[in-house]
Amino acid sequence: MRRVLVANRGEIAVRIIRACHEEGIEAVAVYSEVDRLSPHVRAADAAVGIGPAAPAESYLHIERLLDAARRTGADAVHPGYGFLAERAEFADAVERAGLVFVGPPPAAIRAMGEKTAARERMAKAGVAVVPGTTEPVPDAAAAVRAAQTIGYPVMLKAVAGGGGRGMREAGSAHDLTTLFRQASSEAKSAFGDGSLYLEKLIERPRHVEVQILADRHGRTLHLGERECSVQRRHQKLIEESPSPAVSPELRRQMGEAAVRAARAAGYVSAGTVEFLLAPSGEFYFLEMNTRIQVEHPVTEMVYGVDLVREQLRIASGEPMSLRSEVLEPRGHAIECRITSEDPFQGFVPSTGRIEFLRPPAGPGVRWESGIEMGTDVGLFYDPLLAKLIVWGDHRDGAIRRMERALNELVIVGVQTSQPFHRRVLGESEFRSGRYDIGYLERVGSRLLEPAIDSAELELAAVAVALAEDEARQVPASSRSLQPAAGQPSYWLRAARLDGLR
Ligand code: MV4
Image (cartoon, rainbow, N blue to C red):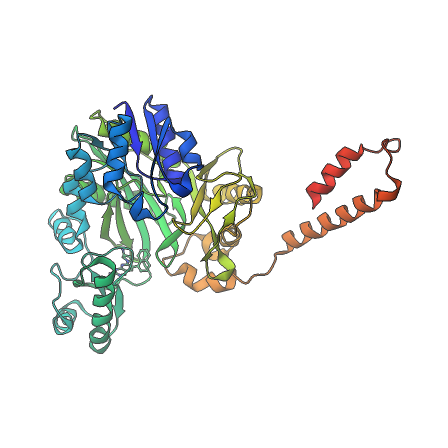
């Protein structure tokens, strides 16, 4: 592989381009009309415009992407996450065009795409799935019959689903009958397929996922878990590795299950097996994500690996670079997703120009960003602006380091999730590590009272006082070219005043 087309944008495109360059591979960026000046475009060795801002006309347009690859002589395509990453027909089209798809075989994407078929395959492979139906339930009456065996409460899920759409909890036959129609029509409009199946509802679970890597030389191994329970409406906001809820023994069991799952799907490349972890310690297969994930850096930091580099090696047919069969996590990593959303207004998307940006830095800090000063943030794409990832030798140290890094971060021009992250990190349930998927719903409204915290207020008061003082010392009428003896120059004072403002 000598030249990879990166069929994506934003922080993940930049991340992939960096990995290509470290491997001595050239990277070709693609961009929509609004992304012409975006950081991923300048990071690449070549860039091709692929159409208007609307994703269907650019980042989702298979023919335009393949054409860009052909015109630039790329020999491989990396899809990143989102957009076309989990569309088997895209992987097929890439391979038909004689290019390497940097991801799993199309058959593995298909095997995991249909939820009831995936459940059946996993159960056969000896991976625990949530008790429920392995076939779709044709109507509400059939759902009620199935629920009698499973026992209430149950959960209706979309066969074509994912991301919580077409999903409903039912506590009784009466609820189930009403909710069946709702869930089915939601699934129909979201996925074009209204089929539903049933599972036992797992109460107060955590969302824990296991990273796997598989190469074409028969090796499949796991790189521990990521804790992803801090989420709001199925949007993850903070992830960490290791999970505070996973002991070395549980890690071994979940890791083994994830490896069995990957093998049963004929999996190659980096992938993630999602589990629900019940308070009892039992865990159940949920689904498999056949892509590199947003939160992959927390795994990279505690396992000392570069997952995108491994994807590139595996795609080119080489064995993965990792030597040992059993890897151990070292220390603790946390990721905060910095999105252009206003946490004080129910996370409504925020738009505007990034007028000023000071990324955090220093020991143990990683900043994965798709923005820079001057970037215009619009509404066409995902609101993820950047990810802030920190490493520490234990969880408390990582939390303190994240607080320090969040305090260094300055983004002016759009509202972001930054103040929300500060508050979660200071909240006692998060700090204890004993949270589950219901956490944000429980604490969210309390955390998001739009009060200025006392540290911010104090800082603002000091800045105003200093600015006033500076202004009084330089009355416009008495300006001379030379400052008084012992006083800083007017240029310096003007600059300070500007800074204070
Ligand atoms: C569940 C569940 C409880 N019991 N299944 C949500 C998205 C989809 N991929 C699976 N989901 C869930 N399935 C049973 N049987 C709770 C959820 C769930 C959830 C899972 C992971 C992360 C966040 C979640 C938020 C709400 C519900």
